[in-house]
Structure formats: structure tokens, C-alpha cells
Length: 270
Image (cartoon, rainbow, N blue to C red):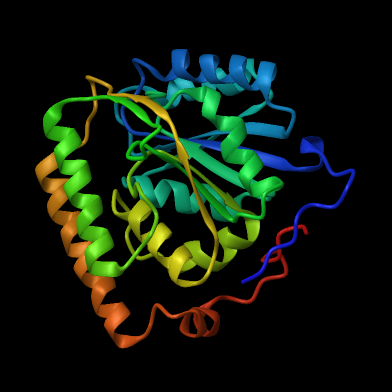
């Protein structure tokens, strides 16, 4: 799949961006994180952007905080879903979005926001359709427990060995996609939870989309809600499901093209 660079005279202001934050029971941190993000975006991002909070099943008052933020800031939107699942939240927000570029980050802002311009520029100007923050590149700097570091590295080695992939970090909550990648890839993803990220990257790579890995500074959130054992088991089952698809030839670019929905919005601006 070939991509052309953006034409001369096209700058960030020519592109619209939706910055999505999926949340589940994050009332205690949501306001501070969104206001920190807004301050950064206003000071550093020239794209036409909005922040989209997607609450997937919170019961702790997260909705109230989100609605207060939308009332206070015109560039903040709010979506509420009754069913849980981070993948479900991202799927819903990205498919209903009309933005040229969509991205997401975890509400704890573990990934340093200074990397966001590079994440977006890779899509707008460098010919990539997917860009991802990577905690596992040599230039990356991470602060997290030995246990989580080891699990992450082992999991990514399993993905590479089982599915013959090249991207470096499947699970970092810091990713961006072009509109055409959203339209072609997201409807094909089966997982609605944490494996969504891995499945997204595997499908993108197997369909021939270019993925840019960006080294990041990442600090572990001590309040992380991820259930490591349960999530790890679900991830392994997801890898096995994709491996069976790979064996059957259903992950090939030809198979993907035949399965992709037809949409006039599928073409990202060239």
C-alpha cells in the first residue's frame, strides 16, 4: 500500500483531530486529567481538535464530572455507553467521528503529552496510517514495576513469535489512526476490551498499513485498574484466535479488502 506525502501548503490547521479518553469509574481523576490535556493542546497543537470523553459503564459519578467539563469547555464532548469495555468505547467514538485523525490516551496520562505532536504528525505528514507510543524501544524511558515490565515484554514477544508482527508495543495506551484506517480496520475487530489494541495493530499490519513506533516517556499509574492475570489470559486467547485466522489466510491484504465495508469516508485526504 503506497502513501503520498501531504501536498505543499497543507498544515496542521487543515486536519481535524479527535482526542478520545475512554473512562471507567474515574471521577476522582477525570477533571484534573482533562484540564491538563486541554492546557497542553491549546499551547502546543495547531490541529483543529476536540477532546471526547467516552464513559463505558461507570457507576461512581464519572458522568457528572464529564458533563460539567463539557459545559465548561466547548472543545470537550461526552459519550456515555452502558456496556463496559475499552475497545467498545474506542470503536464507538472512532466510527462516529468525522475527524481526519483520531487518537486516544489513557485517562491517567501515563504517557508524556510532549509526544502527542509526533503521534499526530506521523499521520498527517509522514505517510503513516497508524502511529503508536512504544515503551519498549531503546530510546523509551519507563517507570514501572519489574513485574509489569516483564509481563509486557513477554507478551509482546509472544505476539511477534505467534503472529509475525513488527510493531514494538501492542498495549501502550497512546495511539493515532487516519480516517481511512479507522473505516477499514475498526469494523473488523472482534474484541471489545483490552485486546482491542493488539487486534487493531495486527490487522493494520497484515492489511499493509504503515505503522510508526514512537519512543515515549511513560510512568506507571499506581491506581491502574488493569487486572493483570485476567487480562493476560484474555490476551493469550486473542493471540490464538488471530493465529488461526493467519493460518487460514483470512488476515491477508486480499482477504481484508474483500471483507472491508464500502464507505465514501474510507479515503483519508491525500
